[in-house]
Image 1 (tube, rainbow, N blue to C red):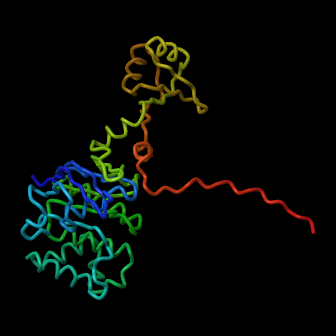
Image 2 (cartoon, one colour):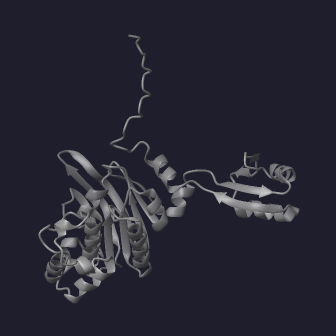
Image 3 (tube, rainbow, N blue to C red):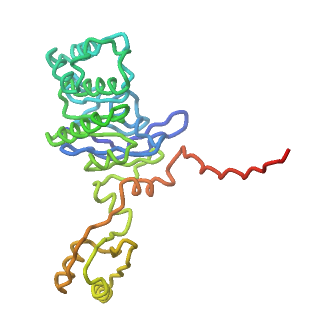
Length: 315
């Protein structure tokens, strides 16, 4: 199985534990969002998986082996950690050709990935002339070069325009649908919510959550239903008898805490009460994430104090 397996992984720098006993798996066939505040250990963990750093203890493996043990590693793992890593004096094509040669990847593959990421028409330009978004696309091309079963992407939408963000979202989804293992680190909650099936969340180097997107959001708050009906008083009385409290909102809708739409819909149908609108209201990924990591942030800005009133002096 082409999974990423992290077991009791720890890393210390000068007595500071950046990664603290992590154990989790990243499975094929789904997009796994890798979340955590700045300084939570996400980048360090990815570097340990890719053999760019040595763990203090524990293991990080891909398909049952350490990265250094992989023959022609780009054929197994594709990674984007730093879009600025490519040498600025090279062209995009020469950069990818060098990577291909080092892993015995056919040269024709270079043209294929340049087409795929939308850089074919600028492939012979020097990388130093590229915008951040173009460098990001080049980094993704390098990650795809070996047609790997495992993809690890750190902030892949950074610098991309709206079209590029939609493109990378669809790319990650299609890669997972092909049965590949996709791990994506991001601070953009909206993008993670739109793409990820599963979440691994870190805080101060420790594992805070390893769960499905749906379970993560559901665990952050009480289910709630919003509805609109032709007979709110009667429905409210029926729900009260069953232990539900319905309360009106300013827009004419009603809110029922601790319920799901299918429960309320079944009750209303049984009682012959017409429902005009019915929907589950759930916490957002952003709110669920902030609730979980509220005490795990190493670098947080202090609330801005209100400015003191100024006193004008007459002259």
